[in-house]
Image (cartoon, rainbow over all chains, first blue to last red; front, side, top):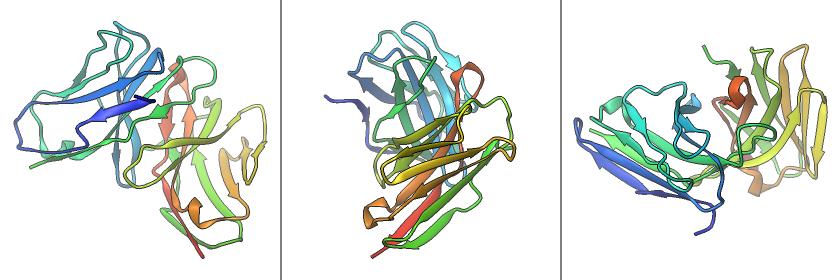
Length: 114
Length: 111
């Protein structure tokens, strides 16, 4: 593994179903992030984690939850999916949340909720 | 209300010419600005950045200009190449070191 991996690559999901998007990084970065990308709106932050064991809410957290049990993994869960959660989801990581804040992104998960 | 805006959803440029991508922001507390490039089916990748204490940063064919009084930044690519065709996002760092992204501009460089 090099960088950030996300799984699945794409998923079609029935409304009301539970879904977990997986994200793993091997760069030993402290901070991790989940974004959703929607046309014309760019990337919007859903949740973030400064370090293992801590999480925080971003701009659009409703309907999503995260956990950070260790440094490498940062799963995003949709407890009961709704069509408005149809989007492309990107996981990212950075060395920290101070100083130079370059974030490295995974390849994305395309989620369709019907 | 979006704090970071890229008003041009798309831009078409001839190969060899200059590409200028623009970005406006409203929050004067932003202290660091970044440009990301995104190809289809891939995640965004970092391209170039600039601190709010500077007005220009150059890296090869890419130059970012910052006009703090106008709350405006621009990315210049010269000369443009077909491989530069991608979606470009500007991002600004604010409180808590959070990044706020613009909506993106799709650049098409024609051979």
